[in-house]
Image (cartoon, rainbow, N blue to C red; front, side):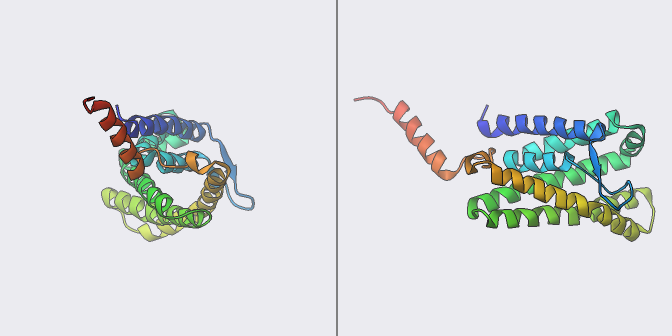
Length: 210
C-alpha cells in the first residue's frame, strides 16, 4: 500500500481516537468570566493537526471517529444531542468536509510560503473554517427539522466558537513552531522532486544491464 494512503489512515485513526477521548471524558477548560457553555477543548486541535499532516483522508477519518465516539460514549447530555440522526449526520457531513478542505488548504500554504507567513495563512484557514461551519451546520439542521429562526442560533454559536478558534490557532501554531519543517510537511502526497528521484531509482533497478 502506498505511503500516501496508509500514513494518512494511521494518522486519522490516532488523532481521531485522541479527539474522541478528550471529548467524551470532558477534558475542557471553562473560559474565565463566561458561562459553562464557553469551554474550549483539544478535540478540534487534534482534527486540525490530522488534516494538516495527513490531508483530507486523515481529517475525514479523525472527524468521523470523534463524532461517532461523542454520539455513543459521551456524557448523557452529549449523547442526547449527538445521537439525534439529524445532528449526527449533519455534523458528519459538514465537519468532515471542512476538515478535509483544511488539509487541502494547508498543503497549498506549505508548498508556497515559509514561516512566519505560513502561520498567518494557517490562522486564516482556521478562522474561515469556523465562519463556515456554524451557518452550514445549523442551516442544514433547521431545514431538516422544518424550523425557523436560524440566525440567532448562528450568532449564539459564533459566541461560543470565538474562544475555541483562538485556542486552536494558538496551540496548533505552537506545534508548527516547535517542530522542524520536515515534521510538519503534509504526509499524504509526494512532492514532484521526490517522485522524480523515485522514478530514477526504479528506472535504474529495472534497466537491463549491459
